[in-house]
Amino acid sequence: MNTLILKTARLILRPITLLDLDYIHELHSLKETDEFNTLGIPENIEETKQVLEKWIFENNKDLTTHFTFAIELNTGNQIIGLIGINLGKLKYKNAEVWFKFHKDHWNKGYATESLKEILRFGFNELNLHRIEAGCAVGNVGSIHVLEKTGMTREAHTRKLLPLSSGWSDNYGYAILATD
Image (cartoon, rainbow, N blue to C red; front, top):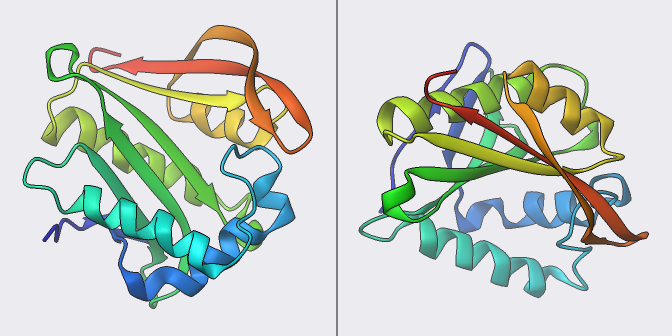
């Protein structure tokens, strides 16, 4: 079982558990967090549970390649979002990061703080060479977070993301261990 816990000045990043189901279902059900997300709003809590169980399974493999963390404030057990890092092929030493926060916790620096910690983990503990992220071109909040953490916009891909509003262009970002 994955017991990896990462800490920042204000946050605790810990592996998700089934006890997080209600929170994750609420997070995925919010119209605001769905706007730029390709997962879509779940039809019911069972659909969310299936996603959560897959993430937990991936977190607990002997050689974990997909890490999904619940983000909590270090002042209590209040979950405020999710963040993940998914490793690519071993030879390439790369990964992709993603994050999703409850709207009540936007614009407080939590996404930037947690992403900086995930990047540190990826480069220093997983010995990665390159970490990537993508976001819809209209997702100004995520664009600011990616750029504040030192990621560089490298690509503009047309009509890549199937969002609830229709197909969206995507910006591709990356950061290297040497950056």
